Image 1: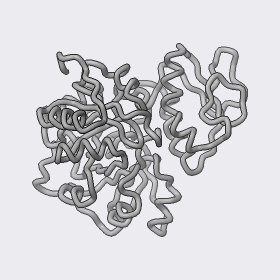
Image 2: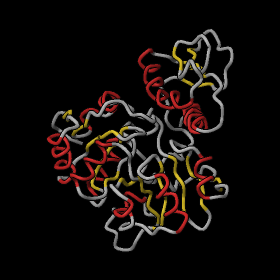
Image 3: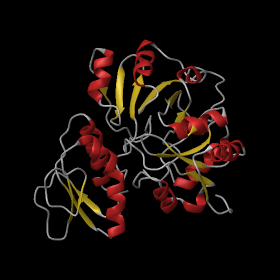
Image 4: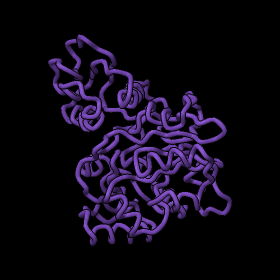
Length: 316
């Protein structure tokens, strides 16, 4: 928790240098990636990582993703098998997180891994994220920069609205291009999908030459984004709705008459990029009951439907 006002930093050399200095001092900095805005802290600093959980109100049993600049950097902290190396070569930098065995003496805070023997790692494909990682020179733990369980942020203003003076700074790099979080794959003996996301499952399976195993929602998550209720707007959410009730605000997809539309053209890439911003807009409208048009369940549609199912799940 910080007492100083939230700083808005520009995505230039001065802003990245200032952001890196805050991280080195144990502070919290939100920054854009191609997926969503992350809330970054020094992954080797227990107190800094604890600050992430405090700012978000995040359960401490929910692990964090560590962001690094290159695969070579990542190999200093985790063990890569052949499957992991193949996926990293094909999709890094990009919207893919790999869950890998943690190296001994890695220096990564146990709060990052929630005490598990694995580490979730991603190499982001965004110039601001890459610039901040370069300036900082170490691993940055960074979940999405929003209150736990709420809508993920895809603009700096979303971060300000959700966290404000609970963090030190946000680097304003504009809107995120992908708009849904990274796909997460565990690379043990059998590559296993833990969360659908910005890299389509079909592309991962084509790279590996075989299907991914699937993981059901565990009571204790082994990776971020596995809690049943997540990404939730303030209003209740009902899915696969063709005809909304009179009290519902329709979040449309395709050529439908709706208050907000993820993609009038039925484009899944556009819908993914707009999903969280539309949910934020529904909050701003004061929508208490939200109906969502059916979304095709393939490619990025799987990631969109995953987020919507969690948004519609019963709240704890």
